[in-house]
Image 1 (cartoon, helix red, strand yellow):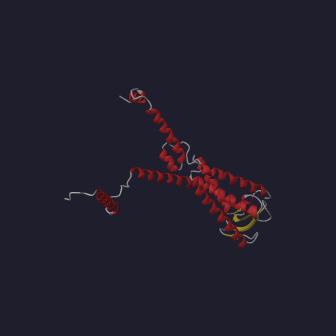
Image 2 (cartoon, helix red, strand yellow):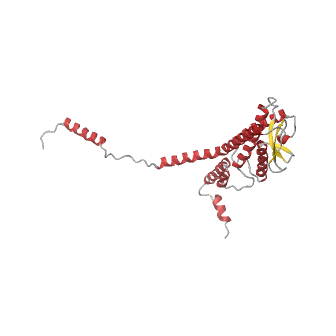
Image 3 (cartoon, rainbow, N blue to C red):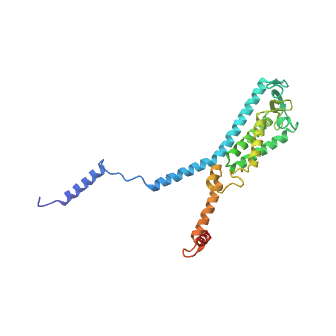
Length: 264
């Protein structure tokens, strides 16, 4: 052992050892499995899925409406290119056929000569449906309203863009129902929507996904599509529990009354 140790050399040797330890591949990494990070990730995923489920009925509404509009306009263009005015083509005998009619009235050739009135009514219906869609949380109502929206817009396009002019355009009808009336795809969508709305209304289903007289089970309401209603009821329950827990521990309170109410 040397009699004299240079302090400077000891400091340099210690610094070198620390540097080697830092640069070594054997450094143990810090644990990353933080339970709080997993909890945050789960809550974020649940929030994202909740937002997606809330947007789904609105997406369904617009998809149904777009499909109806496209099919309606394509079928009308086909009728204009294939069918002749007033010439009937039988499909199912006299019950169903094809005949091209330029309708200046409402659906199924009703109220002839009042095109501009029905154009304004259709515009109003479209505005109402767009406004109602903000509270939409039911897929069934989304399909029904999508059919109404698609049918209204399909015939509105004819009234706005076809001859003889703006707000006076004639609607193209080509589906002949036994000689009683002539309609198109947009009319079919409107009729189906009316039937669906009647069924939903009689069944007690609301636009926000709730149902009249349904159970107060939050899970059942969420399954039905009423996320907002379930959240309101859940907040009310938490408030009741908080008020109950705020009672003094020594008082008889609700626990004492509940115990006395039990059968002996």
